Image 1: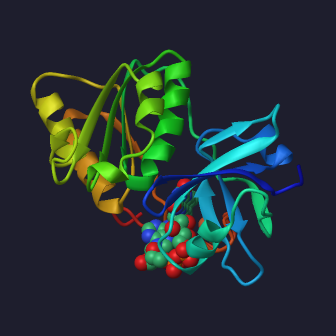
Image 2 (image 1 turned 90 degrees about the horizontal axis):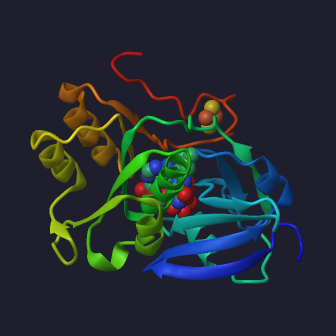
Image 3 (image 1 turned 30 degrees about the horizontal axis):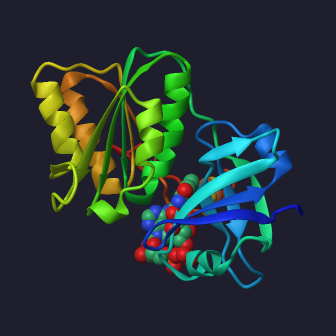
Length: 234
Ligand SMILES: Cc1cc2nc3c(=O)[nH]c(=O)nc-3n(C[C@H](O)[C@H](O)[C@H](O)COP(=O)(O)OP(=O)(O)OC[C@H]3O[C@@H](n4cnc5c(N)ncnc54)[C@H](O)[C@@H]3O)c2cc1C
Ligand code: FES
């Protein structure tokens, strides 16, 4: 196996791929909540992708991405045996993984994979994990079996009702909280609208809420300031 070689590729949903890549140095240092920057080919942009899984013994990392533009399209064309042009990481501040008590992990679309990473690590340190995974439609739901293994309860929500409850994850969370359920932590990852709505739902209940703001990036190291977001004027 060569460095940066794709050793496994799977299509998880339409235009959504999992790749396992040989990257022993990254696999040895990776921590929950971190990401890598990938360049599929010489003419591609550098794109940030979340570390979904890593195996320091095997020397591999797992990435899950959705084809949305030019660089993810090129990445999606690579197959098992191909080499990523370059790969940098692990980058980003690691997530705080500790015992909170009852945690609710919410993921939508391709970000269900990132939510799985968080649910798995929160479960490992003893949290009771409720998971809510959502997508536009049934065929876009990924990581269902993996979620069943790491969560105490799994809710599936689709916008069109083709699987699980019809509607939106934030509404399901609101119903749980309104019926007396309490969480010590809510973690959400997905589109900005989902993360904002979840934060609005948990605010009156004063629940610690963490979201993954995947803003546009340039260097990915904290130097250029491109990914900085302003919230409430700060
Ligand atoms: C820290 C971090 C982790 C990420 N992890 C993942 C991951 O695990 N899997 C995954 O599929 N994607 C992830 N993303 C988003 C991914 O980096 C972008 O989809 C990718 O850069 C798009 O490149 P492109 O050239 O294919 O598309 P572009 O041509 O650059 O963009 C295509 C469309 O996607 C939108 N877009 C591009 N980047 C983002 C972004 N960061 N947030 C919202 N919309 C965007 C553009 O506005 C445009 O409408 C992550 C982003 C960040 C910042
Ligand atoms: S991309 Fe975050 S500081 Fe440059």
